[in-house]
Length: 387
Ligand SMILES: Cc1ncc(COP(=O)(O)O)c(C=O)c1O
Image (cartoon, rainbow, N blue to C red; front, side, top):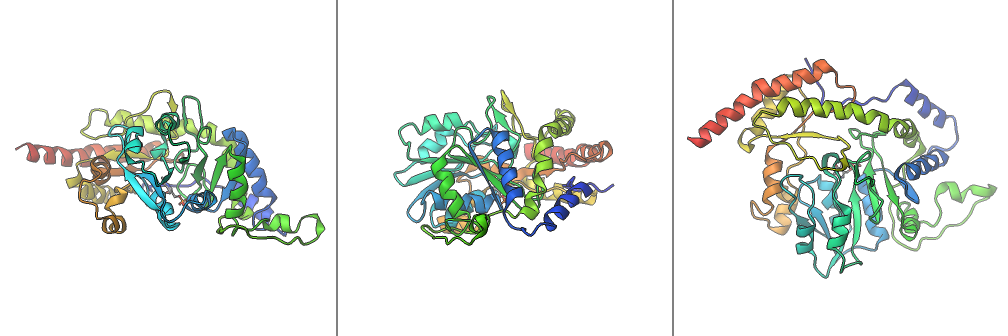
């Protein structure tokens, strides 16, 4: 049996939404996207929302809006996707890595405090796999540095909550990804939510080359309006052709989460007695259940991926620690084990298939393959190591 790592659930009705945009003269960012932004404000309870064409471009537009650049430092966790660090380096700032909590794999306020310097301008906590970093605790750690901006990487965490609060509630902004495998997707895309009106107004410009008016506003009121450019910006707007895929998903996201909860629970129960590590779950929170990641001994991880592949199971790795990739290792001269928790997790992590249309038979095949093929490999490795 073949089980893909991911299967989207867009349907013929979504094709209809694209067809209706094609019937209008306006394909780029227009009224369809504006309506989605209003829905996002409602869902997250924020004053503002802005659609962007990826998490990455949304984050670069944010750093530009904050005038962060060369000479500045941005603190990021070592256990995340490279994009979290790359956005700082792309605008000429320095990505400063911190290790993560060994149980939750989330950024920990004490490590952040230890990494702060006079050059620190921003922190990007990552809600890894769908669990939220405690933003209130991070704010307490920054009490004497109110100049430092918190930008939440909520790429995995559309549905997540901590203590009843959603991303974007406390920080300067939260950024989501609508990349192909995300819980809400339009193939490529993303969104920012913020309560900071001054930041929102700058973002309207940095999202669009620094221009003072986007296309829909330039042609409003029947006549052409000139625009100005007062600050450097980029092209990060999401076209209506993609935005039209989002409303149906946003409207049903909370009804669809219990399906992800159930799939998660099946994996957790099945692996409870097995020599497999899982990230621990935080109390008083709602997990967005974006990724189900197991950890096996690093010495057998790549063989385990091979065996799962031979059994028709699509898996991936989220993530090898960012400071270990060649670019960062060579640029900053990191020694092995500089970020021990992130490196150890990243060397043994395997993400299993997790998507709402995963069938019972498909999940059973994944569970049985892990228990019958991978667990014996782990046991052999552990008994060899103890000899
Ligand atoms: C934690 C995290 N941050 C950022 C990104 C980048 O998102 P995008 O592909 O929308 O730029 C991803 C994408 O997978 C991610 O997983």
